[in-house]
Image (tube, rainbow, N blue to C red):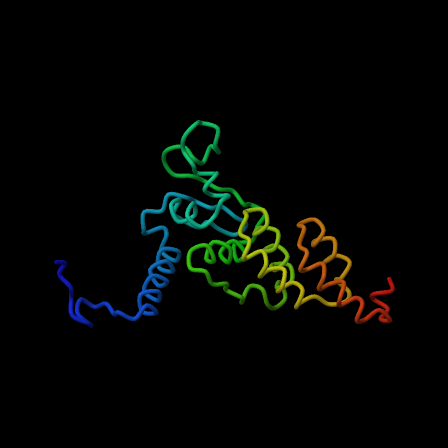
Length: 188
């Protein structure tokens, strides 16, 4: 017979939401304190560096699984022993933090997607999530860009959607244009 703790003993709860919350908090702590927590991946970007964990990235992303997979010697240089450096030098730190934060704890920090740099950061998030193979974040970014765009941006947004095969964004942009077909911005 296995020894069982009485309910509430040992600091844990039988409530599954408590267990999920604790796991979520642990992942958030690892993301925020990577430099202090045995990180083995350095992500260099425009404005800074993140200290991350290869195992978490491999578990959450096919792209990083392929990058770090050891084995036949045909993989990426980053898959070799020791720490790895990933260079996303064009991507702004705020956008890189959104992407990797999502991989760690499944939430999106929307603050960098608002304000003066919001549309540019949103477009960058769409590109980065597509390039690094994070489909749920790619879908989020499409919806965010679609909901933030103005009529003046429709042509650029359609070009972005075409480059990344962002079908949701393309449909939303075309619907916006159709709903405003008599507007001077659309006629151009």
